[in-house]
Image (cartoon, rainbow, N blue to C red; front, side, top):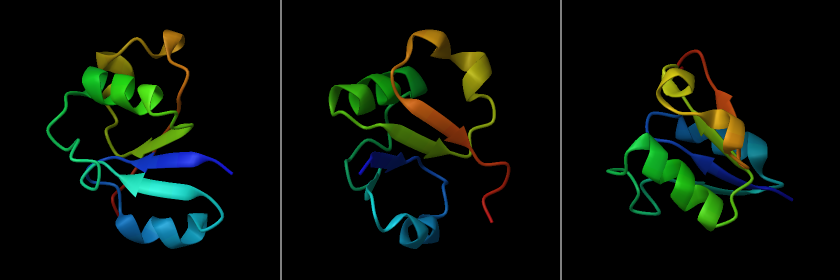
Length: 78
């Protein structure tokens, strides 16, 4: 079982397809206002295994090579 974080803008209905995992949103965690770097650090500190986001610029804004959390970038919000 994985802990999955849905970033702001990620379609929440995707959650029902991940029912075998623990899924939380940034809004539920009150992390909606965190910058990408702070968000990734907070997610790692809370032992999330994966973050799903629609932020296609994340890889250009952050050095992801040192991150322990997996990241899935959706190409659309629908």
